[in-house]
Length: 238
Image (tube, rainbow, N blue to C red; front, side):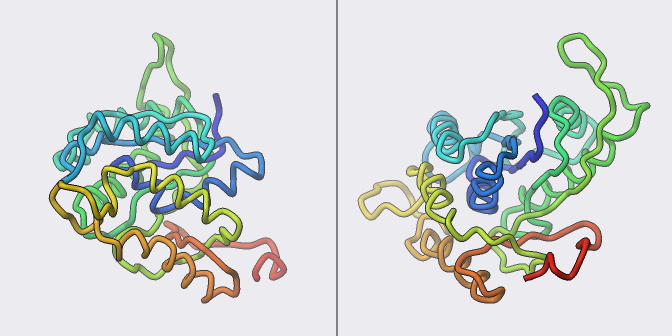
């Protein structure tokens, strides 16, 4: 299956938090979108890898993505090296996405910036014909996505561009809340964490509202680009 967009996150829930509204919108426009999780989030303060697996599956159904895979890298300890790059290259060549969305270029959690650079490097290397990979015993053709964009996570990084997600904020919030073990629950007996506060779950909406306010729409999600953002005409800007 060829994808239009592949969204990649270091942990299950990264994609939903960072670009869930954009994914829901692109799917509504007929795009084929998939999600790739690098780890199972086994080091998360709350829940477990098994719980996260179920939550990720539920979130994928809410967003309506075509596929969701998990590479099972070690949470907190994966590296930007040949082994990990090749694993991602195989997925990129398998689905041949035109666009890759990935972790924030700088963030509080060390896996986010590591994942950002790892995916970016793998996207470049995937286009080199002398790097050989196989799928089901068959050689994979080289493939390089046309664009790599980085969604915004914990830190309020200034975006290079934003996507209007008005009409899709409810799908984003529903997908985020599918990770019920992770986020705000006043009755939870598990340890608290920076993302288990009510302020954090509320911030998912108010950040989207603020970005929307700044560009004259109701809700938006921000992204950073690895190269200049171009438009075909001034009419494409609003």
